Amino acid sequence: MATLGELERSIMDLLWDADDALTANDLRDALAGGGTPGPALTTVLTVLSRLENKGFVSRDRDNRPHLYRAVMSRADHMAELMHEVLGSAPDHAAVLARFVGQVSNDDVASLRRMLDGAQPR
Amino acid sequence: MATLGELERSIMDLLWDADDALTANDLRDALAGGGTPGPALTTVLTVLSRLENKGFVSRDRDNRPHLYRAVMSRADHMAELMHEVLGSAPDHAAVLARFVGQVSNDDVASLRRMLDGAQPR
DNA sequence: CAAGTCTTCTACGGTTCGTAGAACACTTAT
DNA sequence: ATAAGTGTTCTACGAACCGTAGAAGACTTG
Image (tube, rainbow over all chains, first blue to last red; front, side, top):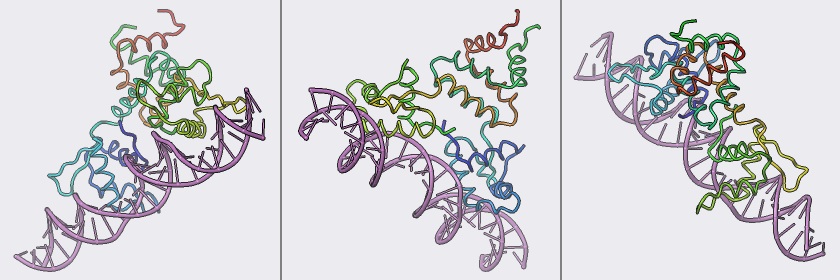
């Protein structure tokens, strides 16, 4: 999977946080935080096109202005990235051991719950 | 953390798989697989310098030729990458849920063992 | 010292990313 | 329908990163 640049990531974050689809203008406005001017609208559109090419964003061309939305949820995307990393190592168990050793207590609790799943306690 | 290019990753893999430190020549030889010529020695040295700058490789300058070794183990490196991904999302639990849902049975077993740890069954 | 080996310096071409103007397409109000 | 406004596409540039490696310098060894 391709890696995201800084602005690309910011835009994905906005799309992930939005409940429904956004327009390029919505994004440009959201990117203009505080006194900083933020990128030009065309810049946002260029990046959206690139994200569409990479398969991260889908675009509704029937609406005018076009509506953009994230193809995957952030959680799915991140989980896939983590999988990619894990899959690129031959010794999964060793990686997982280090990984688990470093996660916060909260995350350990989450993992435990998920693994226990349907099992009785 | 910076992301690795293709050759950079190949070299890291060789260093990770090696038990002790390697020379640039060792690496060039290892990279010349089969009939393919592989990169020039200077190419390997350039990449090693870049990896050193990124903090992935350490170099023993007292030896001649210099000895190169990975700063972290592959497992540590990968675990750190996974952490970085997880940390870049606000909702860890959601990411972990997707992640666990996609791992192989073997990996689930590994995780279970690690989480159970010292606990009685 | 000479020859060979290793390292550093420098540099180029490809790719990605942020950036955005210019031109074109589309919508809407008059 | 035509003009004004808004949105999209096309094109392009500079910075950064990566693979690539020659040329020149430093070091080792015979």
